[in-house]
Image 1 (cartoon, rainbow, N blue to C red):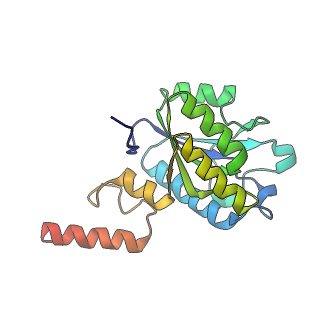
Image 2 (cartoon, rainbow, N blue to C red):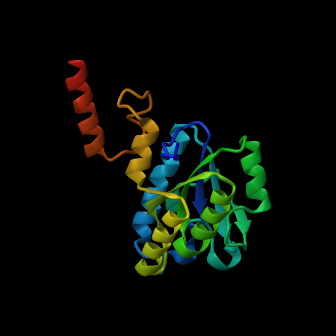
Length: 197
């Protein structure tokens, strides 16, 4: 059966790629990208999905931006475009080799692309969160996403990931997960109609 790409909280890992200060003025939709990545990080913490953070040459590109809320995550520094450095590899091993990766960050045609190729080549399922991934130019961003889809990655959105991970308005952590309120209200409303509450 073809992989349908149903995300699960078991065996998943969140990869946060190079969301650093020097990118702030040049990356298309930077503020939105960071705020969506922050929501994913918050949700993964609540749902006990492990998170791995990288920084590309921090001496030149600066630290991870504070509004990501990644304090407490030790960044893996790198110079390669792929996130799969030796230290990230060993972190994945120590997590029991998760097979589903939720991937977000910067830049789509560079580090996101190289990381995706490496992961897909290993037979891992890669979910690229399109509204939490960007580049300096919208053209590079869009064509990179389209190209990565051709390589077998699943393209999704922040909201899509959060709702898929929670699955049900009865989920014990549903109200804590940063799903947009309008969506959670609709789900709770439907749940009440269905259960007669």
